[in-house]
Image: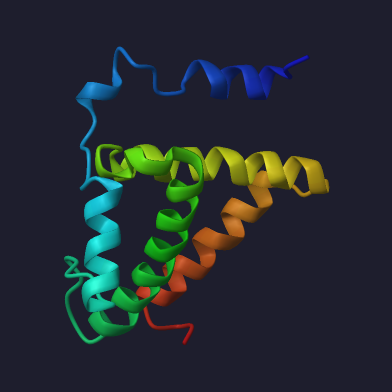
Length: 123
């Protein structure tokens, strides 16, 4: 049975009717070609941390592409990257639940790392 908290989250989830309103990134196949061909992504990072944060994004892209290949198979050329990232996040939450980990704590911890990395407080 869903707790009130989980029900609220589920009700706020993206549905097929409102998904078209979201910004959609490149298809997973294109993301895979960019990472494979160059080992780099040309993202919108600016300043002295551009290279370091770009490399972090590449590490994440490699994980998303591997996940998408496993889940979507040959359709990665048409699946949008935002869908794959959302699906991966959902599956990571299932994993956290199965391991008895606190999802909100993990998200806060990750957010703290992200904030520190973009401010160069964490190498």
